[in-house]
Length: 141
View 1 (cartoon, one colour):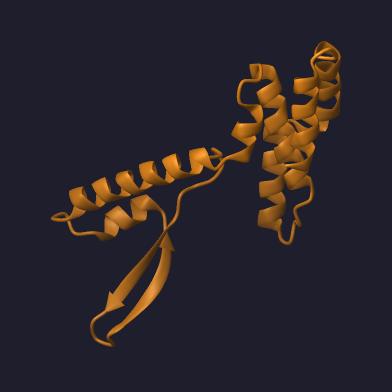
View 2 (view 1 turned 90 degrees about the vertical axis):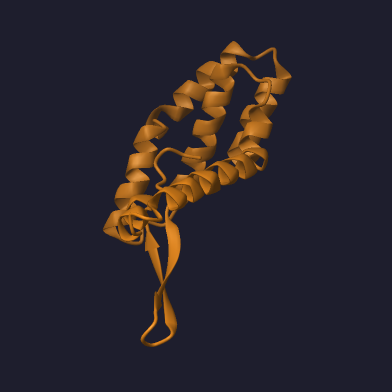
């Protein structure tokens, strides 16, 4: 999972007076703060287990890691940068917060110098068609 994403949990807050529930999105820390001390340990363990299971499930479904599997580290890194820069370059900055989020990602993956870095890597691996194919496929990811 990308490091810039924060995990969020959807919790149903039950109102016994009205016998109805309200869905609220919270960070894991906020969930733990709302749980009574008696159940905090069990909730913490449940959050950890859920997080681990989610990570395992998504690790097998990551097409980018399948694409870069067995490739040199520099090829895998540039393929990730290509995929992320291509994706976020097409994102709509519909408000100031989203515009800032996109700018942070573009800076993190050094999208401004991606063309130069990719050209250098293509020169280095010019006789390795498998590497060149990975770089080409990363653009379509």
